[in-house]
Image (tube, rainbow, N blue to C red; front, top):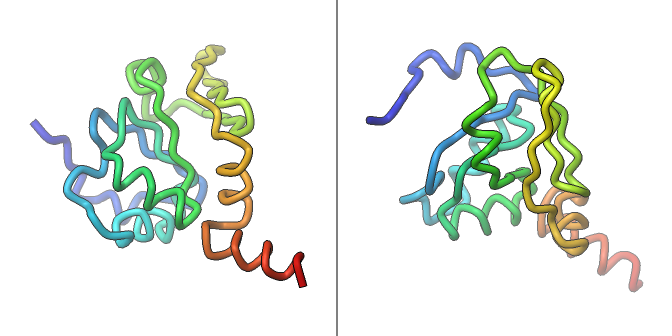
Length: 129
């Protein structure tokens, strides 16, 4: 069963986090899906797993994504969450719990900090000039 909230677009606020199940993004072969999620103001998607092409597209456009089944199982809709993208630590402030996702390698952190692959490449070209 798929849990769809048809009023999501009315409730989402900048800085919100999506908590998702397995294989999030499956069926999305273009960058439009992560672009739409990012454009809605979503700060991060935490899922049990991601479809590989969605994962790569999300990184390419600078949408933060973390795989952490424990966080998905324990985070509730009203919980306040803080994320350290450098270490992969997800802190549930509400429950005083921490969950560990895999940290991005340094080069991927640079891509994310540059708001995606295009921004990263532009910054590299500019620094080499």
